[in-house]
Image (cartoon, rainbow, N blue to C red; front, side, top):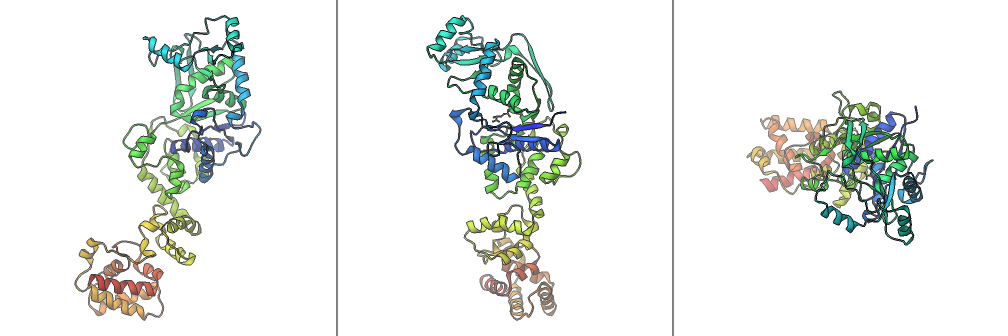
Length: 485
Ligand code: GLU
């Protein structure tokens, strides 16, 4: 059997979005699980929608997630070039060969004449084939003259009449379409650029692609591609269309619906928001696939060894931001502390916090399991770096009883003279104070926590005090006594 060759073929019309990354991931997982190769091909033939830095963004997004490719515009490879704008001659040549074989024709319609045709053709509706026939009726001679005179023209596929176009999708099963519902597709536009359909098919053939894995939205294009393969006399690759991604409230997850629901749409936004790349990957893997076991937390390499297209479902998959948060917490927990330090630094810097490595390491050890995202360190645990300015009012009502001030003040006095400031002695001193004042330990623990952190929940109190250190702890305890009375 020939080596599996997969391509991820984004158009640089914008930054890589989360749905595009899911496609890239499935392409990658399938290629790697089959011991095959993966190609990054940039489909940049639509110059009207071209975005200058989109290609860089795509490459960086793939790198961020660890989705390494084998061939690409930057890496080169045996089928270079990998940017369609650099392969135009190939497409033109193939389009002309289709004209010669009678599978395509020159058409002199313009966008305005097509609009006119659609308007005039009352019988036309979306499911009825629109055949541009203005040149079909012309003799070869007339066509040649019009071409020679430099008249604007396109090349269209001559869609055969009354045939059923069928293909077996590895995920959706058999798909068939009546050719009466397929327009005579433009293959080469009037600016000489190939359309997506032509370039995509020619490249998949020339790059020896064995499987096309792409989003559900490309299903309507596939019958057109099948016709092109047939016209060229080529064997089409296997097709696999991934299930639709739904927004949490149903309906396709689009830029708009995502925005409305506070879902980041571009991969770079996930990165900026402090999501772990492994968590994003893990989450996306489950948007349409499952391992058939209870296991949920996987890193990329682990996914590669369990992934199979057979376990990709055809039902739409719902995007659940809370689930992503859960995956993120799981993967943050797996991070080495030094890597975690790198992750949280930018957020500290953004808030103007300058923190020494040793101290930051202690804090990270303390709250590692409590972070859902790296920036939680700044948003939820700012008290590890700055004295609390407010105290949770519910906490005050519940925990700051009439004797709180004097208990906390006493505890502060004991800490101030404590010889070794470690968890054991911190706890011993607190319990000792509780015993001597004849109160339960909780009567001191809760107000102390409130005093040093401003909140009533968090990591183990004695570990927190140890990390904060004597000076900070004592200062905060005394401050709270003054402020809360
Ligand atoms: N260039 C298309 C895109 O932007 C590729 C579709 C395909 O994989 O065939 O997604």
